[in-house]
Length: 370
Image (cartoon, rainbow, N blue to C red; front, side, top):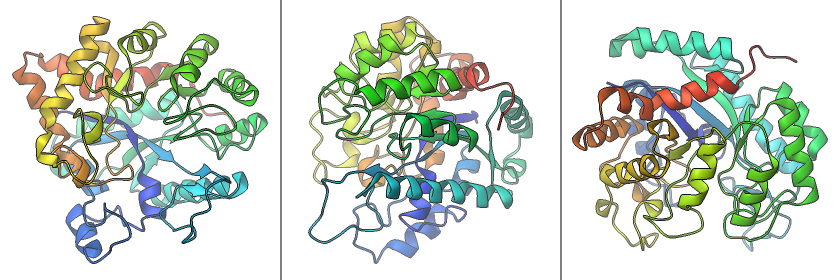
């Protein structure tokens, strides 16, 4: 079994907004939801801490996610599972509630929050040395705190507060536009506030996640930002057209800047022409995930350019994952597909965890400063 470092999991959002007990097995989570109809993902969860351990997922970038969208006033009112909030203040408070969830789990030994290089090396060494599945079941899962969309950062000067709270990776926009940039489904450059935010990221040592940036915002951010960057959950536009994916030029630029692209398991990012709610998950498999890994390696000429950022349970469930993925533990199937295509054991280990762990070891601070 390969050790896995997952570049993107919305764990706290699933616990706080979807009211899931992630300390329970997936079967138990889904059994408790089968009667619920507020979201298509109910009863279709794929992520829990027991399943992460059984699948060798010992480390991840765990997000806080909350959007500020004053223009969104749904007729039925806001639902608990909504990402959107009417004000930035509310989005910030929602994100802090997710952070509180991580801290609660850490106090119980379920997870371990990782904010610096020393903590990462100690945690990953413990996981690599565990060996047996029985020992893995007793270990905490490592969480490097990440933010998807910077709406909870009230303004650029607020960034240091989040850094001191342990935030180490952040994207600046999610879907649509916010005060910092244009994101997925929108078009446009960075705003003045977005440029100031990137300057603050660079000063602090925050890793920039370039996922979800519109093309104009992406290219401006890449040109402007001299700090560490990566794409936590992206696939290839050449294989599945659409601006949510990266062009070959974008993949090369990330690689030249020392970053890597972590492939995602959202089925519509793996299957051209996917229609949400209609296309069967059985049309997609880990074979398509392997296609994107191969393409990134081919475009960059470097096995070190790619990792895994599954985005499982990122606002969807197994109705929108590859048909052969019913649990995060199934990520081990990607290793089998890569082996079938001639990847060596060392190369597979780099894709599954080595590349992203090395990146974090390089770019996390030597020690946490508060």
